Image 1 (cartoon, rainbow, N blue to C red):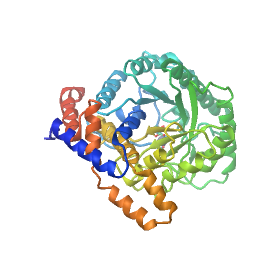
Image 2: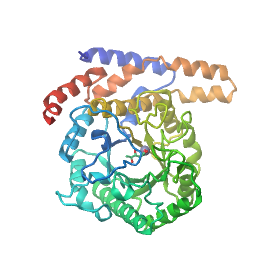
Image 3: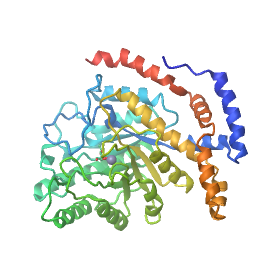
Image 4: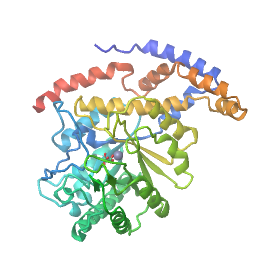
Length: 425
Ligand code: RNT
Ligand code: ZN
């Protein structure tokens, strides 16, 4: 159904494209070389709708909601890894894998979240090593009985708050172990669901508690060669519509004061507010940041990322200012209504395409126009750039890195669905 790409045609188209871009002073070969060095962190939770493998009884999912019941979701860590491998085989480049604490492997034993150890993630680490992947990590402060009333690190009950502090400390140690094992720092990102559904009488106290909790979580210094701490804000969630403790201002302040990575999630701001324009400001004051690239449709719906203007703007900001070493690109979406492997592949390929488009921009020309006050030329050129033969460069890149070019990867996923997913019942 989806055409097999013709190799001779791909090469021919690429060489034409190379000449077209050269007329604009853009070196396509250099762009591809730079692109191949950018890792994207694929989130494990797209593979099983943010379920994890602990089988704990929790009523609240922390306001995170995957909708749909497409058959064949991964039921075990091995299935999840197998699916991720399939997805990665269809994505050009070397990437990372982002695991949540709820994906611990405890050999059937019940291990409380505040007691998890590096050994419970050893299978993930071994798998990452075998596949040449870096890893990132996250405490799971939701989908747990102790999070059911909507509060964790900002809980009014000291015992519950302690529990989540211990969990986050355990996670930083796991992150350190991961980073040390794989030789590339693990970004450990703290996101909590804490907030009120309805109008609070006290917006201050929970924030003061969260600040105290974070101070306790981060009290021990960990070598940034192994672990980098990130904190993620949010505007609202299901069940925390009126008030989120960890708001943007809260974490911006916290990250600045403590020099932590700020995580900007594309779905965590007002619906028309993009994260692209925040990057240059935040990076004047922080060394590094983490992005959660997502696509909110009307709300923080975590749709699969596509090559939208928003996505392109994010990639442009990273590339234009040479932030490739300071911005960690993570994905954060979950769609249970379509094939989950296709979701990973579609979203990740879109992110890489956006980066390629940004790398193919005639930067010097645009800057010259802008500095000369020629805004007519700037707008007109930006518009014309959209129809340059970008697809030919993308196809060539996929072919060079030995993954399917064009839409033919969809056949692979359909076949995998028949061979592997269908048997999962
Ligand atoms: C939730 C946050 C958070 C989660 C993951 C599972 O709104 O975006 O990043 O999606 O931690
Ligand atoms: Zn996120």
